[in-house]
Length: 403
Image 1 (cartoon, rainbow, N blue to C red):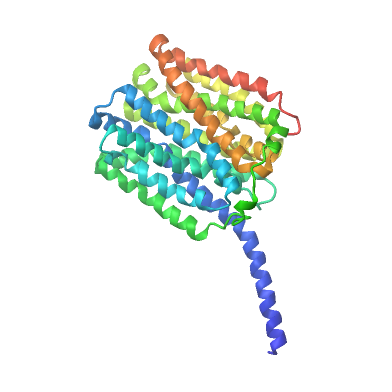
Image 2 (tube, rainbow, N blue to C red):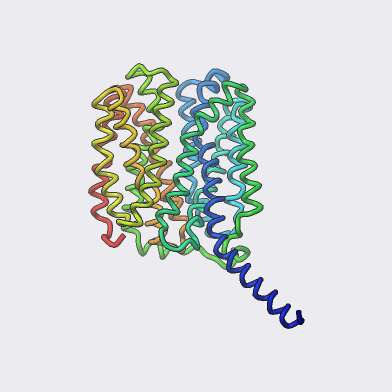
């Protein structure tokens, strides 16, 4: 073969390789970030499994246990806009890549904390790993994948929801079989995933040019009205979603006489149904549009959740599962709609939709529902939350019809 023909063949192979890598890279990013999301959210839901043993070891009051939970919610969720801003400002993959290992190391080791102050510090630091992951990962996951963004976002978000559902069982098993301190070994999968992300996650587009970027508020201000509506829609959904996830086992045990194990299984069913709901909602939004899916979600979850409180037995559990399924249709939908409104600040708006709204709803309504339960009973306090999606229906009607 002549040198000219050899050079031509080499050049053609390089072009084919580049074309293949361009097609593979977005799919690889989706797979890696979905894997990371699974483990990051697994760690974010671990505290409930640790709480009984931590209360016994440190002699904590229920107020102290609640403060510990509040610190975790603040660190994992409320701070996400800060990390969204930083990820938009500094174009490095380290925010997403380091997060699973960072969160895993500190949260899994809660049982090794020497004092209550140490617990608060470890929850704050470990939660930062959870918070840092979400804005950058959610803004990158659909990049380069073409149409069907709702479908791709649904895969990413459902992987996190599944991790959140499995987290309490994962750590309960470790603690019961190995002991509280040995639960630190639960960090191993997160560390492995961090190694995979560091090795194989493609670099962020525009990396190395942070000094050229300036955060611009103008794109956010230009769409402030629909963005604000989307924020409050997530806030309303999160009131029901997060408060149920925190208080449901206690309600089932105290009000319905379930064993703690049966109550935990029922919670897992609710969370897994929600994970499936996010996946279904993403597919539906690609077919019908996000606004219509939000309306369906807000309208259909109310009767199902009401069925849970008004009945008992299998019918009640079915109502809870279907309520969780339909309520969480909107998880990927809200994020994609916000990103399409402000594509140049996708990390920041993702943080607003996924973290800040979620965390602020939890920080306000978990303690408020606990207070209401003390004064009016858990049945009345929790069942009243079912009314909030009705407000969501009215808000959704204010969204532009093209969304």
